[in-house]
Image: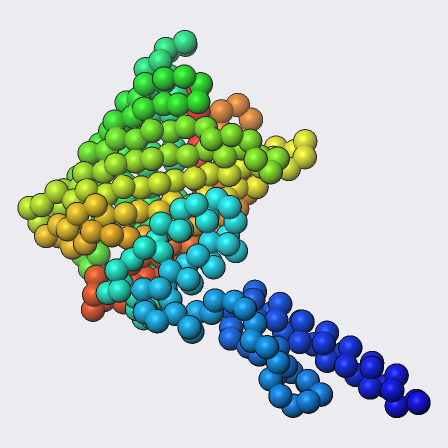
Length: 301
């Protein structure tokens, strides 16, 4: 009689282990059998009903699954943009990635030209230090004019000069761009806003015009009654055409920022945090993964 309770307890423990293995298999995306960890019979139990990365037949689908999984970890804001990068041709599915540390500094200034005016001005300037923060890699100057449609929507048109500093030679890019900035709403105790930008790119290394679309989302949540806020940002870039200076139609890159903001008083706000940039390179060239410290200053007047 004493052996029956012991066998019952062993069966319950085995069932619990199978359940735990199934949950872990679902979360991690690995293919597991429910009875493979300590089942008393030694036989595998029923297969966990989950789609695993290893079961996907094509490299493109495996990349799609990996990116969707990454988006779920980033959060709702990252998910909305990263899902776009799942629809890639098979040729972009490569495992070779070159990682690098960088530092990105930027200043953003915008506001109306006068009190109660709907005409807006915009300027942002950037300095990006690459080669493991060993030297200045890129500078950007980007002015624009805008029109305030209402409190939640503004339309803009502008120009950008992008200069790359590499191996003692400068590459120059001119951009004409149009964008809409807008409020999406209040979620999870914070505010969600967006920016949709269309760029026409001209480089001194080619004759074509490169068209690129950029979708930006920002989530900001105040921390109590303090001047601090938590910030989560994602921006995804899509090439709309092939161009002779390098880009190919499809996914270009995605940037994800997580950090904090402090209102310094008046119209100045500082944001500091970690920026992750994944760049999809042409076939035959390693993709790039940038880990950057990012410091931004915002002046709204």
